[in-house]
Image 1 (cartoon, rainbow, N blue to C red):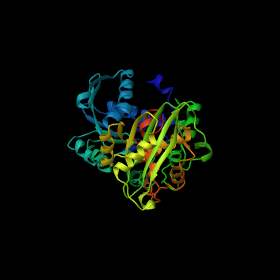
Image 2: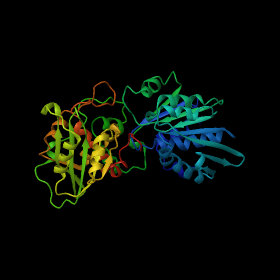
Image 3: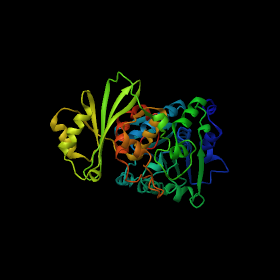
Image 4: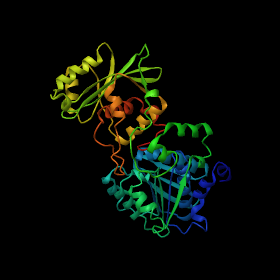
Amino acid sequence: MSRHKLFYSPKQKLLLNWWRDPSFKKYDAVLCDGSVRSGKTMAMSQSFLIWSMTRYNGRNFALCGKTVTSLRRNVIDPLIAFARKMNYTVDVKASKNYFDVSRGLCKNRYYLFGGKDESSASLIQGITLAGVLLDEAALMPRSFIEQAIARCSVSGSKLWLNCNPDSSAHWLKREWIDKRHEKNLLYLTFTLDDNPSLSRAIKERYHRLYSGVFYERFVLGHWVSAEGLVYPMFDRKLSVTDTLPEGMTRFAVSCDYGTVNPTSMGLWGESGGVWYRINEYYYDSRREGIRRTDEEHYKALEHLCAGRDIERIIVDPSAASFIECIRRHDRFKVTTAKNDVLAGIGRVSDALLSGGIRFHSSCADTLREFSLYRWDGTGRDVPLKENDHAMDDIRYFVSEYLRAKEDSFFVIALER
């Protein structure tokens, strides 16, 4: 164990040993929140494994994530590698979503569960557990977490939760963190400085890549409500250009479709690793006084794309009739957009800050919406459903084309 401890920060060492520290072992649960990449997940999973193998034999435990896939990637694979370095024998039953860990005469079983929606609570019913670890707990439904906790009926069982901060109105903040003394909960907050594996340059990059509510949550580790403009980092001087680079070879279109509400389409071209919104089509039937049909919108799409080889049209998933119209004409490849609003907003924020997207000054409705697009002011992470049509089609584009590059940095769940 000593060779591993050399790489732990004081906060990680506290998390590793809280259950045997005389000052903290009285607690029934531990909840860790704070900055992204602050090292809390690694330290918590390792502590959970050592605790369970030290205190129990022949018991069942659960490790839970938003999905089993994300849990394997973020927690299980590194944990199994750690277990083997610690001379534990690990027998993985991937098809059955569990693994056994043994050393000497001691052997315990660890089940994997995904808590992606309200129906997930039924997956964990009926099992008796000696402990549960909930990774990214703020992303899971309350019913799943409460069902997982209810399964821990073995004497001496403990609960382990970690997450990145969310809204100050989130139930986990109100019912657990704010009531931690009633819950007999040890509460630890991690910062970027609590992860000794992060270089100064990486920490500075995180400070640059986030702004507004995302900076407050994911860099500073604060539970804050979304207020004001959704994209306060949007700066016309940095993101808007009067001239476009020559030699663009890749083109795509993103579309938010409406009948009563506006239809917004953006034409994008790539140059030097930057995607430019070259031109747009924005039709507001209320403003114009006339509704347009699918065919009329399609003709506008053809005009927008004229003379360019378009890789794909990314369309609002609810626009079934317009998607069918595009397919019927058999000219463009159409893709249904990813519509995770909050995760998409995070990706657009990153793209704005990193300079991954820029806008031609002729895109007047886009520039207008950037100055008006706001959170709803209720404390929930919900934008107002107004001045959001170009904002939505931009989000669809970024989630399709910049996601692979961005997801290594942005965490929300956002699945990470």
